[in-house]
Length: 202
Image: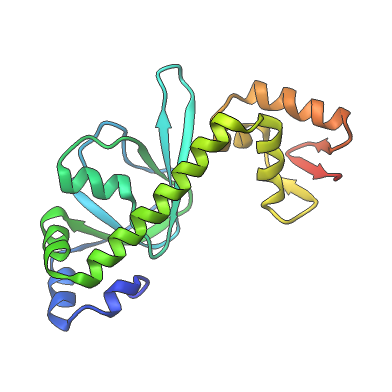
């Protein structure tokens, strides 16, 4: 729990109450924590590792929403648990994770009684909604070639170890489309394609 800033500011009684009612977990990579449409019964406090939130469209496409890392909670998880409504996305571990599962009742008590936790939750929602707004803008307004280049440049390296399938998954499109766009970028001498690697030339 020490990874969470708000936890440090709780009273000793609040800390004991959380720990006495929580369950410590360790889960392997590529494990589905909950599926789109499930109603979550507990909230994950992620202490180590990362989890990706994905929306599965009716046409079979997968749209990545955002990633949560240590010291964070998932707003989809929180919303589903607190409101007892179906989750709007699927949560899958991208690494091995460690954390705590907290029952809805305990989190509801925190939200009512702890201003520190309230502030944490509101700031978390603000950050994640900003990320979702950026995603919507990218999908609606930016060309796929620009989105691919932006994704590659985030790695801060001239040679990026990544497959076409991985790019497609991150950008919510198909591998075939990504391969076609990358070939066009290679013809323009913007990238050079290697096996499971892409080299940025510009």
